[in-house]
Length: 400
Image 1: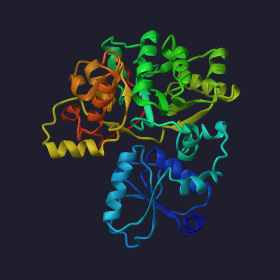
Image 2: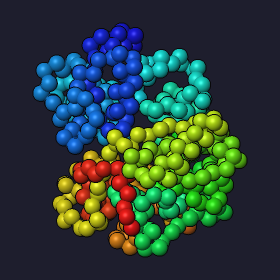
Image 3: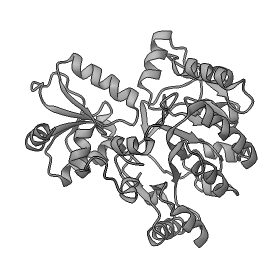
Image 4: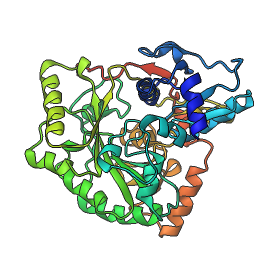
C-alpha cells in the first residue's frame, strides 16, 4: 500500500465525478498536495467551480494513470469501473477505498476518534474501516448502508427545484407526519428485516418541524442495529438549548445544507444562528456547500414511452436507484420518488415499487419481497421519469 500511495502522491490522479463527493475529494487531495491531473464527468459542461473538468476520455493514452471514482452510489461506481477497465485502465479506486482513506486522514487501523470520524466529509459517519469497527461481528441481511426516513413533508423553504416537491405538498395542503407509536412498531420490524444499518438518515422534509422529532431519533439511537443517525437540514429554524444538547450526541451527525446565497436576510440570520449554536454546543455537523452544488430535474411524472432496454439504462444510470427509504406510508422504497408520486396523486406505482413494512406479511416473506425489489432491472416508476440528466440550480426560492 505504501508504495502505491507514494506513486499517487508523485504522479497525481484523475478524479472521476465533479459533484459533491468529487469536490470534497479534490479539496482533501489538494491539502495533501496530490496533483489533480483532470476531473472527468459526463455532465462536465454544466458543472461550475471545478478546475480541469472535462468529459471522460476513454482514449487517454496513459492507461496506468490512477483514477479515483467519486459517486454517491456504489452501484454506479462499479459500472464506471467496469467501463474504465474495458478501455484498458487498471489503477481504479473508489473515493472510500482504504488507499485513499490513508491519504486523506492517515488513519491507523483500529484507532478511531468518534468525534472526528463522525464529521468525515468524505463518508459521513466515517470511512469503511471505521464502519467495520462499529459493526464488529454484526451481519446485515441486505447490506443496507443507508436508510432514509421520510418522517415529514414539511419544510421551512420553498425551493423551486426541490426533488422532494415540498412546495407541491404545501400547495395541495398535503402533509404526512410520522406517528411516533406507529414508527416504533415499524422500526421493530425494520430491525428484524435488515439487521445492521450503518447510517439512518432523516431527510425528505425538515425533521425539526415534526413535533416529536426527538422521539423519532431516540427510537433509532436506542437500536442495537444502527451505527449513526444523520439529519439533513437547511438550518432555517430556532431550537432550544435543550434541543442542541440533545443533538450533541456523538452518534448524531447534522448535514447542514448551505443555501444562503438564495435566501433573504432573515433566513440568512437564522442559518448563521443555527450554525453558531451547533459549534457552541459541540454538535457534529458537516457543512454542505449547495451554493456551488448541483440538483437534478427528473421531469413531471409524464409517461416517457421508453422501450425496455432504455428503461434499464435509465435506471442503471440514475443516482436515485439506491435511495432506500422508509416512506411517508411506512413502506420500503428503492426510489423515494415512487412514494412522492403516490402522495401527490401523479401516478401510483406503490404496489410494484415498494414493500409494506407496517401491514406486511411475516418477516421472511417481507425479506423475499425486498430481495425481489432489489433485483429489478428497472422500476414501474421509471416509465414516468426523465432520469437525472438535466441539471438545475439548487436552492432557488419560489415566490408562491
